[in-house]
Every structure is written in C-alpha cells, then in structure tokens.
Image 1 (cartoon, rainbow, N blue to C red):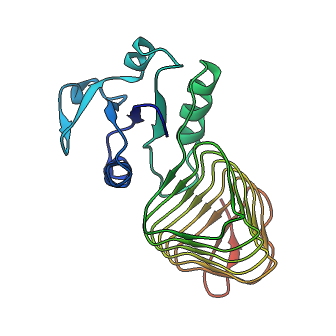
Image 2 (tube, helix red, strand yellow):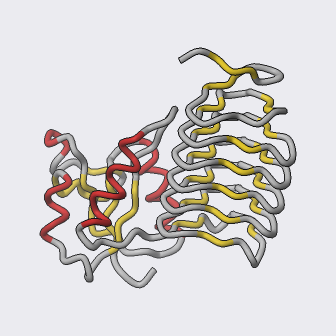
Length: 212
C-alpha cells in the first residue's frame, strides 16, 4: 500500500480499519462520510474531511480508498459506494490485520478486508470489496464472492462457496461443501447443512429458509 488512504464512512467499522491500517503504518489522509454534520470531527485522531464529493478533490492516482461502511445484513450501500468510486477511476486498498493467519496461496481481490484474528486456509479466494471479519475461520478451498460480509466468529468448513452480495451473520457455521447463493442472508448463530439458494434468508439449527 504505497499511497495515502481516505476511508469512506465514519462508523464503527471505520474505527476497526483505522486500527488495522495504523498497525501497517499506512498514512491516513482523512475520512469521508455522507453525513455533512460530521465534517470537521475526529475519529480517533483522523479528520472527517467532508462528504463523498470531497474525495474528488484528490486525484485518483494520488490516493487509495478503503471502504469503511459496515453491515449487519445484506447491504447494497457498501457495493454501491465501491462501484461509484471505481467508475471514477479510484483504487481500493486491500487491508489485512497483522494478526491474520493466511496461507501463502490465498487470493485476495481489490478492496478485500481481513480483520483481526481471522484464519484463511490454503486454496481460498476472497472477492473484491468483501470482509472477513474478526476471528472468522475460512477453511481450505473456499470461494467468497464479491461484496460479501463474513461476520465475526463465522466458521466456514472446507469447500464452501458464498455468492456475491451475501451476508453470513456472527457465529454462524457452514459445513463442508455448501453453496450459499447470491444476495442471501445467513442469520447469526445458524448452522447451515444444506445449500442456500439465491435471495434467501436462512436461520436456526439446522438453518431453514424463511419468508422475506
């Protein structure tokens, strides 16, 4: 990460990212947040420089962006923000906390975020703008699509596939070889023993599909 960073969003997920970036000695230029009332505030000691339009004052070739928008469910805002700035020519930094354990052959796409204490084993691929959150375990040969959030404490056994835009809630367990479709939500604490179709909500032990 050779460029200074602007973080998009000034909430709780941004705080965690600031800590991770500081441990990597990354230069932080500031934070942009959609709430105009936050301009001039500090998150830790990082200044909120204004709303998203303020980023346009920094040439795309001079900075990297980090997506600081978190989620507790399927959240299109995170993807929209990523695509908005990609269309303007900006690049997103990949963030890996120093405490992460990750096999040498893991593929991380642009803007992936691997948070403290996560374990990612061999043969895995993590899609762009996806989050592997605190203490999650992603075992061998898993495929995580673009814009996915794997929440804290999730366990994905070997060969699990998670489709784009999906959210796996805190503490969920997915057994080996399962496919979770795109735009789907696995509730916190669920145990997934069967494939999950696209656009589904599953919860419980074992996880069962719910009506939207």
